[in-house]
Image (cartoon, rainbow, N blue to C red; front, side, top):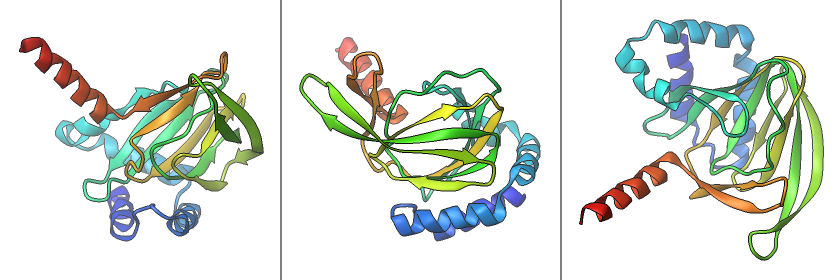
Amino acid sequence: MVLNKFVEVIDRTFTLESKKELELMCGLLKEQVNLQKVTEWLSELRQESEDQLGNLASLMEIHPLGFEKYVLWSGENSGIRGRLHYWPQNKWPFESIHDHRFNFAVIMLCGEYTHEEYNVTELEMDKVEVELTRSSKVVEGDTYFFEAGSFHRVIPSNKMTLSLIVRSRAILPYSRVINPEDLKMRKAFGNVKKFKDKLLTLENALI
């Protein structure tokens, strides 16, 4: 599979845990990835066995931030994942301001959106102040990277939009999401942490 060869290069070469590696990943995406290539990857994936696709299928979701997420690969050793973010035309609302547990690099495959970056100051009682520091339109063929713990949001356009995200393993224990109505910030833990907490709750209930 062409996709497997691409993933092998990434797993062998990258951790995405430094700004330099994120810059190099943007260069690799710019050079080797486009909408036609990703369409071929999707066709290849559909030919895989149900057992091979089971894990990826379990990671597919309508993301709470308002887009459809499709994981194309999940590196067992590196922890690096590749996933598509898909906004159907005229369907999704604005995202909340948030950060991520991981570093990531992006290439825009089609459509466009506005990418906003924020400085966030924590106050009392989970309240925050937010300051817009940068706003840029991202269009087909553009690449950029973003580091764990930095705040941003995406404002979708009225066009069907698809981007490929290549993300590192989780670097931080949780992400943070800001409620736009009251500017309160909450922590969002990964699925493994949530699963462990549920197991502990069940265990305690049985004692």
